[in-house]
Image (cartoon, rainbow, N blue to C red; front, side, top):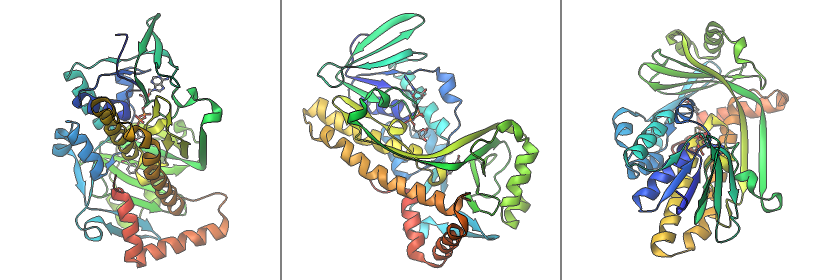
Length: 391
Ligand code: APR
Ligand code: PHB
C-alpha cells in the first residue's frame, strides 16, 4: 500500500463516512487512525441527527439499523422558571423532525460497513505526518509497530478532530482561527434507566443548565452544567442525581428514575472555526476544522455536512475531471458552519448560568426565553435551526 487517491487522516465519523461515500463513487481511500478501533468506539458523544444527516447515512449504505432503532422526535422541551414548554417541530415546520441515535452507533455502523467491504484502515498509527500538500504530490507518513510507512496520494482529507495533526500542519500565515471558550463544562452521565420524558428537555435553572437526553427507551443520557475544572471523581452517582433533580421542573423531577452510571465524564464547551478549509491538496473536515458547544446538538451533523460537500466535490473531480466543487468546498461548507456556530452559541447563551454575565446578562436571558415562549416566529427560527439548515 504505497499509493491511493485519497488519504484520510482519522477514523471518527467524518473519516469513516467520507471513506464510505468515496468507496460508493469508485474512489480509493486509505484511512490512517492514531487509536485502536475499540478506543474510537468507546467515546460517548451526542445523539441527535438532523434529517439531512439521516439521508446522507442512508445514501452511504449505513441507514438500515438507524432506521430500525433510531427514535423519531417531533419536538423537545425547554424548561425555565419551573415550567416546561414544548417546541413542536412537527407543527412549526410542517412535519419535519430529528432522529435520536447515538454517535457511537453511527461510528459502529460505518466501521462494520468498511470492514465488510474490505477497505483499508490503519489503526494504532504513531507519528502521523502530512507532507507536500501544497504541491502536486502529497504524502502521508506514520509508524506502526516500530516500522515506518509512507503513502502517496492525490488528496489528503484531514478528518482527525480538534486535536489532530492536519490543521496544525498548515503554516500559521495561511490559516485564521476564531475561538470562544465558555467558562463552564458539562458533566454527563449514561445509565440504563428509562428516560424522564420521551422527548429531550433543555433546562435553564438558577443552579445551572441541565439536559435530559436518551439513547433508547431503557438508556438515558443526562448532563448538568459544572465548573470548567470540575473533577469527575468528586461526583458520586448519588450527587449527580440529586443535582439533576434540583434543576428539573417538578413533573420531571418526580418522574426521574435513577440507577448506576455506565459512564461519567466532564466536557469543556468551546466554539471554534478555522478558515479556510482547503490548503492546496489538503482539505479539513469536521472537528478538525470547527467545534460547537453541544447545546444545539450540531457537532456530528456539521461534520456530515462537510463530508457531503467534499465527497461530492471529489467525485466530480475524479470521475468528471471538474475542479469546480473542490474550489468551492471551503466557502460552501463555511457558510453552513458559521450558521450552526451562531445557533450553538445562542442556545448556549440562553440556557446556561454565566459567572461573568451579571444581572444584565440574566435579564437578557429572561427576555430571550419570554420572547421565545410568546412568539411562534421565534420558535420557528429555533426549530428550523435545530432540525438543520439545508445543504
Ligand atoms: N493521526 C491520525 N488520527 C488522528 C490523529 C492523528 N494525529 N489525531 C486524532 N486522530 C483521530 C482521533 O483518534 C479520532 O478517532 O481522528 C479521529 C477524529 O474523530 P472525531 O474527533 O470524532 O472527529 P470527527 O470525525 O470530525 O467527528 C465529528 O464527532 O467529536 C464529535 O462533536 C463532534 O459529533 C462531532 C463528530
Ligand atoms: C446527547 O444525547 O448526548 C445530547 C443530546 C442533545 C444535545 C447534546 C447532547 O444538545
